[in-house]
Length: 370
Ligand code: COD
Ligand code: ZN
Image: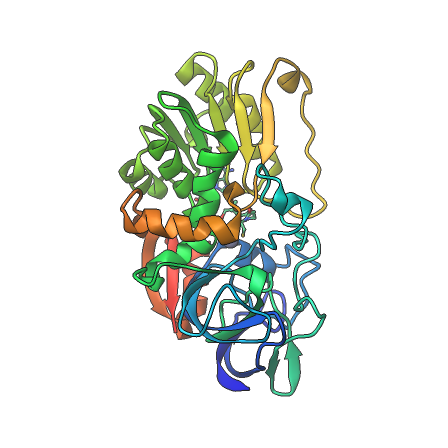
């Protein structure tokens, strides 16, 4: 058992508290990781605000980390002590029908509706003050040491800077893959990205790398525009500056609507606005944000009848165990610069400050260091 620091969420609506926790050794098929760095993603904040009623508290959140394997239990073959790794918020077992299908990445070991609050054997490896603490998405990266199933961790290049590539565990890969895999953005095309947080700005990067000639960035916080431009946006639009609906603004700007639109906010109304913003024949709208559980979207079916495609993606469509290491290699080859998304680097003790910066719209990504 290792005693170490972790940011524990004791209850909805309460700040995290930095505690000493006990982390039990990995059981068969599991890996214990020494976490080096972790990003703060909007989804962690949604859980803290009570947006995921099926997440059990107390819980150690965090799902965008990078670290070094401390030890492995029997049966583990793909990683060993000392390897640099990224824990996977979407597992990749390699055996289920979705893993075997080259077109899908949503492993059957994963249940978005039933978050991985305990490890697959239905027990926890974390305790604090005599209480069992829950896992989050099986990876709980807000702990100095965490235990994950082997199919929820990928070995990465030993040269990778962990304080930078942690973003590839969730936010960057999700947004970038939405453009590359889900939309399959073509060179010369026109794109619109709704929501310029860490994930949406990664979609902007993906559209740029795919060769889009026009990238329209949409956000109600104009402070996000400078960064969007730096990353490749050609136009920035604030819906608050217009009386007419944003889909009409985008249609006017482009003639018939964009080729690809992305909703990277997680609101029902911006989902339908993004759909209506892509052109009526071949337009593709990709849903990246997650609306609060129980939300219902109503929309005019004529929007789809004329040919539009409306689709969603998790973790940008990447088959995590194979693709995250390849994305790390692409990062090292400078195919994209995800470092530009990191606006703050803080010690883990300042985790609540990191959440405050996100809520205030002042940060893109804060990286916490252990
Ligand atoms: N119109 C335009 N922009 C808006 C609006 C609006 N009505 N409302 C908010 N925004 C902007 C905000 O100003 C902000 O800039 C941006 O939207 C949201 O950014 P962040 O930094 O709060 O959020 P991200 O980028 O960290 O995360 C966004 C997600 C959509 C990914 C997240 O909220 C979510 O829904 N996660 C679950 C879905 C998922 O796949 N997650 C990946 C695994 S966690
Ligand atoms: Zn995330």
